[in-house]
Length: 306
Image (cartoon, one colour):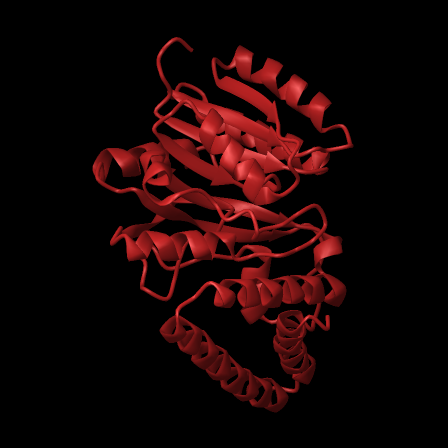
């Protein structure tokens, strides 16, 4: 491709070769005929990720799709994302997870959005959860966002102040990173450590800069979930990571923001009690018990006892 790409799709990956292969194949197919770049940031993978990238680069060449791969040796998702920002050739950057599938319309949907909203600097797309293994009985719909589920309806609209895009399908004008900084490398996953909240912290900075963040339902994808993520141990690790990230964020917040965070957590505990009663009435008490466990694991992560 001789022309400058309009959009760079960045996938940061760590030891997910088989999923990455499927993700890239669907993205390459969707990108055919469009002026876009696919950029893979390999964050020290020790599996066959380099071989997958080599084969997908060859496939992309046959489809006239610009494909690049870069190795980032500083471990951590935020480090990998920041490297992708610096390497991207396009003025628009879209981050995707390495375990997704996109429909044929996906790339066109994002291009159409930025053509229609040229002043937009940040946006997020819809995410469906695709279970590769049966969903456990104890997992209620309220835990699905932990697995990537993200659905705010069928219309393009600004996010509410309490909502923000998910990291598996989020878009930015590259210039915004020069204006407000990059992702916080103290937050986000580091290897198998499931610390989180780096996206939320970044979107909070965007809002403080008075930027509108858009929800784009037509730019939807499928986030794949296997049996390893359908265990209470995985949910526990996710929750502890959330608690650890919450504590770190609060240490950097003003008194008002700290109080707001505490109030939100109290409200969530009360809502969990209501849901427990609801599921008990429906004879699905295990779902309610798991929600209580989830909130307690967050608290353990916050206290450092998890």
